[in-house]
Length: 504
Image (tube, rainbow, N blue to C red; front, side):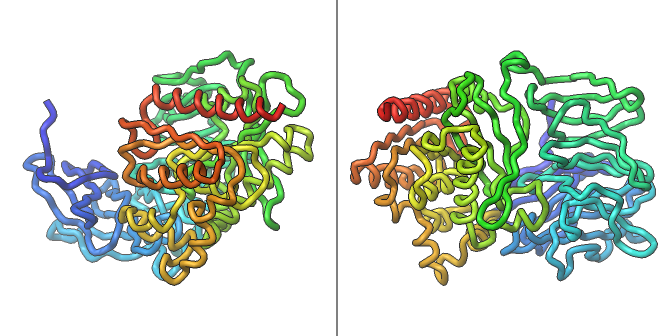
C-alpha cells in the first residue's frame, strides 16, 4: 500500500530520488521552495528558498553536488533563469549555493544534468538555441550541437529531452521541421535513432536500449525501446493509429514570409481530392508553445471532410531559437495575427487552397489570436474560439502566480499601457467582427472564466452576427473528456459547413 510522505495541503513536483531522499519543488500558498524528504521517516529538509520559482533539482552520482534551476518574477522560465549548484560539506549539510550560469545574463536554462564524473551540464539558449553546455577546465562551455532547440518551452516540471552519456549525450532536437533523436559524440558526429518518428520526449538510456515517448506523422504517442546495437524498435506501450497509413494526411513543413520576417508551421492537404479546398488555420495555445508534425486525429477529422489544415508555429512559438521565441514580446495580438493571415495568402499563391474559404480556430491563447484576426483583419470566413481570451485585462486580474507577469511581457503593463490593451481587446472591438463565430467554453474554467465568453457571444449577437455558444458544465480550461471533445468538433464542422453552404 502507498504510504504518504507529506502532510497538509502543500503541493510537490519535479521529484528526484537520491540517497534515500525525494527531492522536490514544494508549493505552499504561492511560496515555492526546494526540499528533500527522507523516505525512512518523512523528515523534511529545506534545500533552497527565496527565489520565486524552482525546477529540476538533481544530485550527482557521488552525492556531493546539488543543482537546480530558479527564476524570479517578472521573468518566465523561457526568458531568463539561473543554474545554481551547492556542494556537500564535511558535516553532511549543503553549502552556500553558487550561480553557475544566468547571473546577470539574458538566458534561459533548463534540464541540468550531472555525468558519471559529477560534472554539471545544462541546456542554455545563450548561443541562440537551447543547446547543451557543461563544465570544462576553461569554464562553462558549449558542447558540439546542432543549431537547433534541444527542448521545448519548460511549462511543466520533469521534462527530459537530453542526457549526458560518457563523453557525449543523447538528445532530441528540431531539424527541417521534424524532430531528431541522436546520440552525439564530442567530435560532433551523430548516430541517428529517430527510426521514422518525429517527436521525442522523456528520454532514458541503458547499455542496451534508448527509451523514449515518441510519435510520428502516422502513429500516436508510444513508449519505445530502441536497440543501441541495431536500432530495432520495440513498442512497449501505446502507438497505433485510427486510420490506415495511406489514408493519413501527412504534414508538410511551412516557412513563409510574414510581417517582414518568417513564420513556420505545417500544411496538411485535404484527403478528398479537391484542387483548391477550404482551409482551417490552427492556432496553438500558450502562446509560448508549439505544434508538432505528429498524428493529430483532430487534423485528420478536417482533412477527411474536405478541408486542408495549416497548423501554425507563429512568431513567439518555441522550437525555432530564442530570437523567434521572443518574437511576441509586446506584440501579442499583432505578430501572431499577421502570421495567421499571411499563411492564407501564401498557400493561395501556391494554388493549394481557396483563399475565399479560410477559417481560423484556436484554444485559450490561440482563441485570443483567433478573435483578434476576426476583429482586425478581413481574411477569414468564420472562426472558432475554444475557451479563448477575449479580454486580456480581465485575464490579468484572475491569473495565477506562474503567469502573473506573462501578459506584461506579451502586451505591456495593464495600467501604463492600457491604451495598447484596449486596442488589442477583441471584446471592445466586437463591432468590427462581421463573420460568424462559434464559441466553446467549460463552465468550471478558472483561467478564462465563462462570463468572458458569454460577454463576447452576447456582443456579437447584439450586433446581428451569426454566433453560437456551447457551454460544458463538466469541463475546466482545455477540454479533457473525449465525448465533449468529439461534440465540439462535430458542432464546429457543421457550423463551417453552414457558412459554406449559405455562400453557394
